[in-house]
Length: 206
Image (cartoon, rainbow, N blue to C red):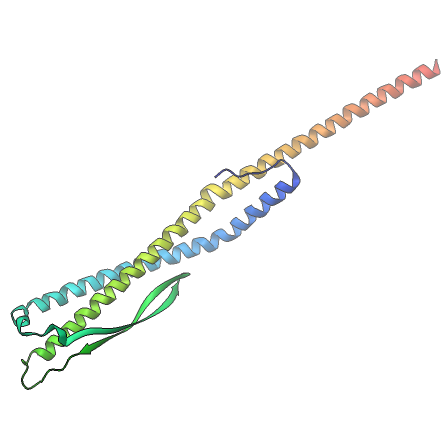
């Protein structure tokens, strides 16, 4: 990123202001990046644990596979999902509060004895699947925010802060050179004036 500046005092003040602002912001951004890294790792572990749990539950579902032909799928369905949101390291993520199921009517006297266990198993399976899906969504949002924050840290640390420092150095050097040149010119002018004055005085005394 090319930093635009002019070789004058106003431009120097602007450059110094921009540099200070970035140097002050950098520790906060780094702290946010660190918090997001921890949260991303924690959420990855959470997703892996839920996926493993889901696999285990599906395996237990498979053991009853022969019986599922007798089951009426309309007996259970997800009625509602209650959501909320929470800020994690400055990022708004969705949270799963509750899952409500609608259980259809069946007679415990005439339906197969395993129906109750089957419904409980399907409820748990659905709950784990939905929780895993929400954790994946949360992970995606946190990963995106972490990448953007890392980019900002790199931009400040590796591009903008060194760039502003370099620009300030160039402007200061130019102004110092200009000042030295001005002082040298003044000395030359003074020396010339003194020579002229001395010459005039000599001519006047002759």
